[in-house]
Image (cartoon, rainbow, N blue to C red; front, side, top):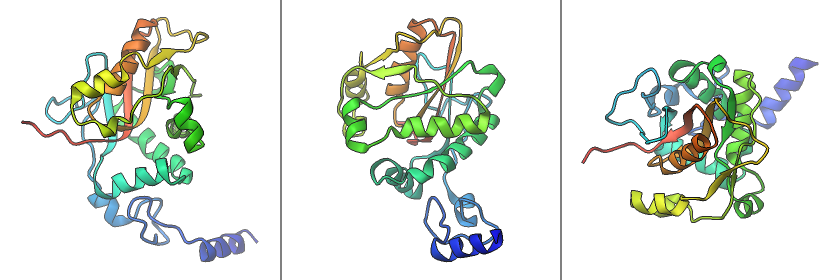
Length: 230
């Protein structure tokens, strides 16, 4: 009966690659073979802290991501955020957890797992907080229970709508605060976001966490915008 159930499910709802949406072969899981080869992997992290190409921030102890924010990766994340493709959260979470095991702090070195929250207005319009879903998925893989630590105290313009780094920094300055019930004194925090463009949002959140007593703030995202040296 179990085999029949999965056969019918596969017939009615064939599995697709989470990036390019091609139909998956029997031996493929989440990603097709071509996307596993061609998706633009983000190579940097706590264990590979090269300067060129690395997202940096004054208050970040480390940063890593699964991919660069390009082509099919970009389209997949946009489906997740804006087209209610919440079924992608566990898949993104599993891959990000794997990347953290390779390029981030070890799970036993993390005291608090949390995420960059959206504003109340954006959550109401979207119906969910995509970074909270991501944190739950990563936490399940790493066996860490995520905690809501940050709150967005005011709605801001989307960071993606601004081109300059200075405008992005000004946009989110003072936009986040630590929940009054959170105790971060001396703790090592892992902060998750979906996309990292310049690092301004993560840097501001890390500043707030450190001011609240956190010892370290390590960060990670599904994807990061490729840095081009000028």
